[in-house]
Length: 81
Ligand SMILES: [Zn+2]
Ligand SMILES: [Zn+2]
Figure 1 (cartoon, rainbow, N blue to C red):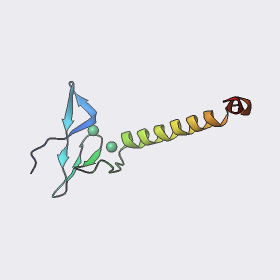
Figure 2 (figure 1 turned 180 degrees about the horizontal axis):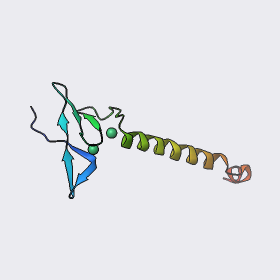
Figure 3 (figure 1 turned 120 degrees about the vertical axis):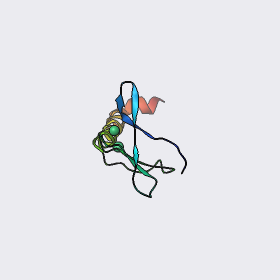
Figure 4 (figure 1 turned 30 degrees about the horizontal axis):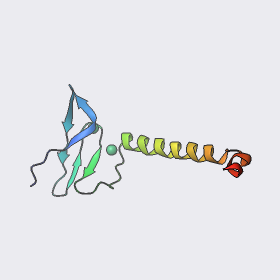
């Protein structure tokens, strides 16, 4: 037991983040309010809660916008550089 308390980054209560409950024997923690999960020592864990899904979709959309912006730069501009 590390004794470390993990808090849900999405559910703040009275200015404090809500502690997440450990799931059984694993190093997985879940927020009982929004369903956000984390895995200790595994930052690449893909959480399926609505907050994380929205964040992922938002970053995908941003990436598409940036890519589109680059592609729409006129040829004349890139040739003069
Ligand atoms: Zn939460
Ligand atoms: Zn999540």
